[in-house]
Length: 460
Image (tube, rainbow, N blue to C red; front, side):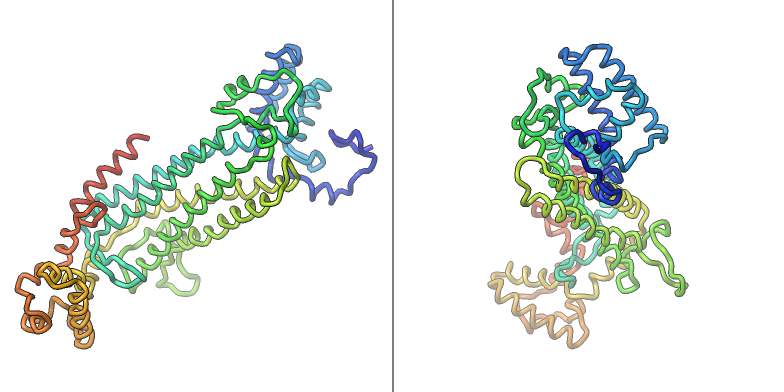
């Protein structure tokens, strides 16, 4: 007979390498604290309901608390032979208190146990994600506040498009991270549901009190279908999806930090703390940490695609495939927390080259739309105005002359509606200040949005 805790109906014993393949303890040991937490609540409920005697509950609780202390002290040792964290904890408990440890599993299955552990693990960590995002947003708002009036080129297709402010640019990412925050906040609702009590898949005949366990563990709700309770991993998929979108936002900004720190742009400089050098080229200062965040985005996407693929054809209820649900979540949680923290550090210490940003809008044609709008304001149809300005831009490119450098007589040859006041309109600062529509880049708008964003953070 096999020596497994579930081995009563088995006569054969698996080879060691087979046990290793099937075991999840190499990674699900990270659920140890949650497994003990869930077992403490479960055993307390069994005693409250009279399913176990108070003496039995006391023995189980005492043993579990000893195991918890050993875990906190780093003294707990786990075994591949016991497959997963649940059987490892039960085996350790059995060595401490004897056969009564076996009563702990009354009215539950590893199916609802692992689901509960995983919910608890996620429930404990999502607040930290929200806290790290808040710190990142605080840094962005502060930086936007300091740079509300710093003029820079706005880009489309990575080409100079129209002048904006650096503060306006930074607040665009605040909005992205705000949506990320709200997604993770909503993720908590689907994580905050108790599966324990579903047992293997059909519920239990014992007179359990799931509401009591939910209150003990701090869960807001209880699953209303036992099949769904043990087979639902939507909360994990939502987390991985939210994490993927977050990493996409970080990666986009990382790309710009990398580009803007080059000699060609020289808009910003990352602090030495978040840069590295070259082993052969002494002059190099590489944005390696931004590059790492950009690179880690792929591994987060992989976690999402992996679990989606695992779940796509699993029939109800629990199947062993679902053992693959945790490794990616563990890794992704570590990855996003580290990435957000690094970004907060990079942004809070970077140097903004304000003159370089501003100068970049003075020697280009990013004010071309201003001239087209100026002509449209004089009654010329916008499409005609667009064509007129397009011809002037072409001429400017050929003669290496910007619109502001062209003599008025030359501009009037293109349209007699152009007057001396056009040179004021063509200034980058004026172009920025005129965009006062909601969400526009005007400095006054940016300052209002900064105050609005401070209030959003203060309400948390």
